[in-house]
Each structure stands twice: as structure tokens, then as C-alpha cells.
Length: 195
Image 1: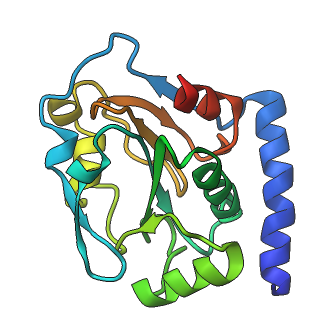
Image 2 (image 1 turned 90 degrees about the vertical axis):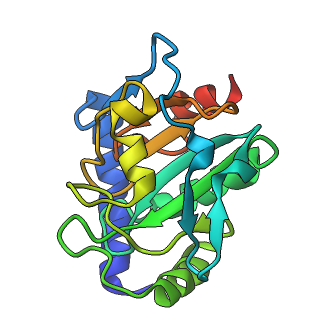
């Protein structure tokens, strides 16, 4: 691991400790009224990083954690935490990574190079998708569903940075949004997955 990557990792640890201790940067939004989506999550599909079209109906019956990811971000060390979460809960959780270059060019690479980076540096085995846009007016359909209350039923929050997380339950209901500063292994996420 190069010097810049080591520095990012060290700064990440400091940033996460500060956020955990102060609450700064932590946003958690919840579907407290148990509002059902207006359009089914299971009607969605997305192109995997190897070109395969994946129909989300295959995820029915499991919780799904969707995360916009980037390989040159201060939160990139969360790849390791996401993989650990995936391994610990894979009997009832699916982790889906959506590489995006929306925030300051932090994901400049091709799908093939992103997959190689993730495997080499973090041993990623969870599903990665083709790089796409996750914010703005012309975002990929999955993120259009996640941030549009006329589709998901209640949430309008787009990703505010890389490594924002959305949790969908076993029936396709959007449960929660977690900002970047919420660790994938936080009590908040683990408790929501285990519920």
C-alpha cells in the first residue's frame, strides 16, 4: 500500500473517532412510519461490473445494503468494513457497491480496474456494479428509486458523499439512510440488519 493510501487510512481512523465521539457528520434517517414503496424495489435492475444485468428480484427475502463507493476517498477504508459485514451476515444480508465519480473525481477508474483494486486491497467478494451517477437529475435508476419519495415512499436524501448507505428490508421497503461517517460495522447498522 502506497504512502497516500496509508495516510488516507490513518486519517480515516481519526475522522471516524471524531464523528463517533461528537456526532458530527453522522446522519441517520429512518422510515419510522413504515411507509411502503410506491414502486417495487424488486422491479429494479443494474449492470454488474462484469457486464451482467442483475435483476433485484433475486434479493427478495434478504436485507440489502446499497453503498456508493469510490477508491480514492477518505472513506475508502470502509470497503474492508463492508466486506466484513458481508461475511458476518451473508445468510440474511446482501451488500451492493455502486462505484461513482460524483464527488470530486474520487473514482476515476474503469470497472475492471475498480474490481481489481477492491479485490487486491480489500478482498471484496460482495457485488460491485458498473460505475454510474448517484446524484443529480440524471442518476442511475437504483439511486433514482433510493432518493425519490414518489418511488420509495418516503426518502428524498441523495448521497451527500461517497460511502452513504441505504438499507432495504426483506420485503423491499427502504428502512434507513446512513451518512458516510456511519461505519458499516456501527451498532446502528448491525442492529438494523439483525432486527
